[in-house]
Image 1 (cartoon, protein in one colour):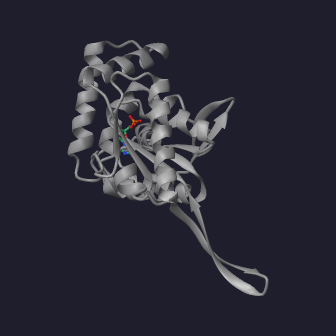
Image 2: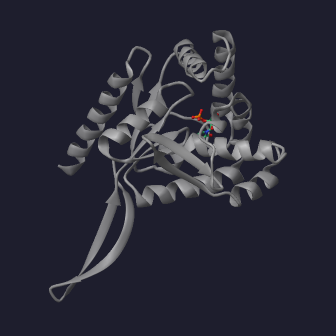
Length: 247
Ligand code: DC
């Protein structure tokens, strides 16, 4: 593991110039929908005092904006323009991680089913990805962070500590069903199994930055793990690797 380099600068002290390197720590977590990435990444970030970066939320925000402004999710040029003209920011309000798009809080709206259904079409576009990846890299240069998504280990943060979370399709569909039910959204296990396997296929077979298991990533299968178990495992692995790379 190498840390992301934040800045190189010259420091003058005691009559001499020193070259200083400030490095930021990044944990990158990828995996398919429902593998437990979001919950795990959020809690790992909280426990380590790192910033939490939900890259999927950024693709969702752009999808929401496209749907609301009538931009075709297959029109790459228009989506590129729309993405360039978007301001996305993250923050924490009353202990809840929130996302703002062009100054409006869209935390709940980006999780609605019509965004679920369309986000994989928006995220295939290279020109959209280029802009969002640039924003993500900048955040990694400025903060110690835990990033989660589909290409954070392979494209966005190639020098991070990398984790690939996975779980059985049935277990992932069950988790998504519970999540939606808690929000009062009516759906079935069958519907969610279909929806998740459709998104798995689109995410892993697309040309631009498909979901891949990076060869350096440690794989954590969460099918039989509790949330606490997943968080502990990732933190243990990260601390072990940090200690090893200091030796
Ligand atoms: O993790 P999620 O379900 O919120 O992600 C929403 C969609 O965004 C998902 O279908 C794949 C896409 N995505 C992506 O292409 N690259 C990322 N780094 C994160 C998400």
